[in-house]
Image: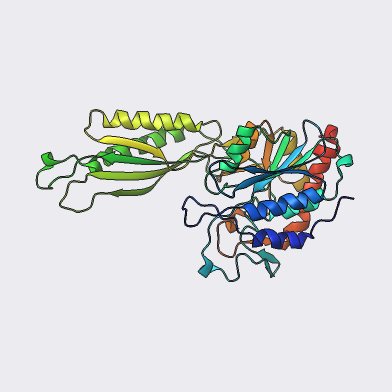
Length: 388
């Protein structure tokens, strides 16, 4: 067998103990070097060829890419090694200390989703390179919770290569083959302030935003009439008006107003096309207005994803879990692995209801079924690829 690595529970404790918060707010953001080096070292001890891939523009942030076996296909087990920020005062135990109570493993990242990596490594340690006819690759990315820059760097590098990918995001061990995308946009109108007693003294950005809001609601109605996918619990694209601020005093004409929106498209709807349509519609609605319109992405966005129901990895995940593959509204790195040429399924032991919450936990009862599931996936796509 391969060299010894830490026990499963030792790995759980170690990944939880290594802080790896990513955030768009610099005061919360941190690197992921410690957890990345631990994963890379454990995988190297098991005979994997490991690499720490730097993320341009980020200090102390890395992707881990580790491969066992040779070939041009095989299986990629993937996830992200970062977590969201946390509210310490709302936790009943130390977020960075693995704590077991009442059949649950508590700790930051146990569910979403550092806890997936000890399970993947536990399944992988049951195989040697000589057992594999196609390679097994384990990938841990940086910054999924903020910028997706880790996954974007994988696409830029064209690595890893594989035929199929399983991403261990929290799905309650139910296979997912589709999810919506997301864009968040800032829409800013700049007018001219003036005394409220005479409207001719200014240009009201707040009144202009009334026109913008009307156009957005009309666009949402059109999109929902045109796009529908019954695989989703909410079968239409959604557009949420999430934040608005403008003006500074009742007796001044509003000189500037800003709106933030969240748009979640269905598979088949391209992000850049949506951004282009957003700008075209708003500029058309404002017409010859003296208002200045500025539209900026609040982050790069994440594409929607859909893998065909007939895909071998979808069928295998359904056979191993005895559940039909479905769809979710949250986003993952799945589209980026699809861009690398892999048929992708989302399937992990955590529950999305526990993600991003105080006292985040993973059910102990999920551990053995997950390891068995991953072992089965490795066997089908790496040991016996012709069976798949």
